[in-house]
Amino acid sequence: MNTELPAAAGIDFIREAIRGMKAYQLEPAEAGDKLDQNESPFDIPAEVKREVLERVMNRSWNRYPDFELRELRGALAKASGTALSNVLVGNGSNELLFTTIATFVSEGREVIFPSPTFPLYDKLVTICGGTPREVMLDPASGLLPVNEMIAIAARSSEPPLFIVCSPNNPTGGVLRPGDLDRLLATGGMVVLDRAYGEFSSAPPPSLHERLVTLSTLSKAWGLAGLRIGWLLSTEEICWEIRKVKLPYSLNIFSEQAALAMLERRELMERNVEAIIKERERMRYALEEMEGVDTFPGEANFIAFRVARGARVVFELLLVRGILVRDVSSYPAMNNALRVSVGTSEENDRFLEALQGILSGGEQ
Image (tube, rainbow, N blue to C red; front, side, top):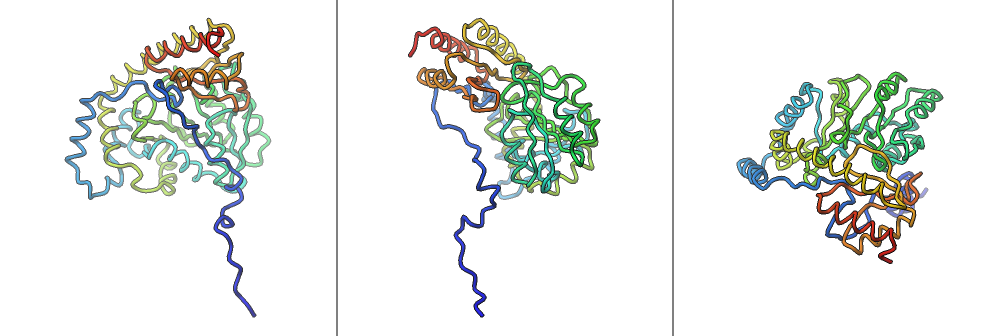
């Protein structure tokens, strides 16, 4: 009896759910004014960089980072008014998002989130075997569809997991006061992504036994290149999530840069204030342009719809050395673009170029 099985091609071992997915990727493009990824327009001051380099030079590179990352977690706990046991840190909030979803989502588990939103939610839920339940939002409202999300939860056979990005990417919409409490009142678990929270008027939420709050130092803090994210929840929830989280995912360079910036909170706050001021100046200028409709939002970007056609405008801006994000393929975002708030000079060049394109000055 022949017990040998025929050899399978390597691709045959890939899970069907993965083979059916599209990779998360960005369209490669070069431009002098990069306004497509919601990064801070303000780099870290040179003297702070030098201080971080000196701190790292004084560390042994042949040794692993502190397993518990107590100093950084302690600084974040102090900044958030919580305890060390309520904080986890990771290699960007994306790592912590994946870890959190992997902790809570099993085969068939319903996960409810607005659409359009950050595409990784759908992707990570699918990877973990869950069932994504997208709830359409109206970008023009500036709000998230909490009523509809609660209605879907009421029809679920078990308490669902909610994922909410507020302010929402790519629309900028936010939760209304009391919305988070209403989601928690359903008995479901809530993952609140506050990647853009510093640009919003809403304060960080209090700890809750069914709430995980994700934050990042990439946006308001200007450390996108160093990939530092952090998570807040109860001690019990953090303990369970850390069972899934990979060890030593944050290197000593990123750790020291985070500590240096947390010691300079006033620098972050000044930058955020300047970004919000520029955001509102840009919004007013966009609303004055014929053929432009902006979506209300409280992030460090503005989503807007153009009458001429998003792809045409995107390409004409790129010719002028200005890179924005074409989000017109997202649900409910037809003919929409998203522009990050840059420096005042970058924003002026963007506004001038867009006005010229819309007025027919460029073909």
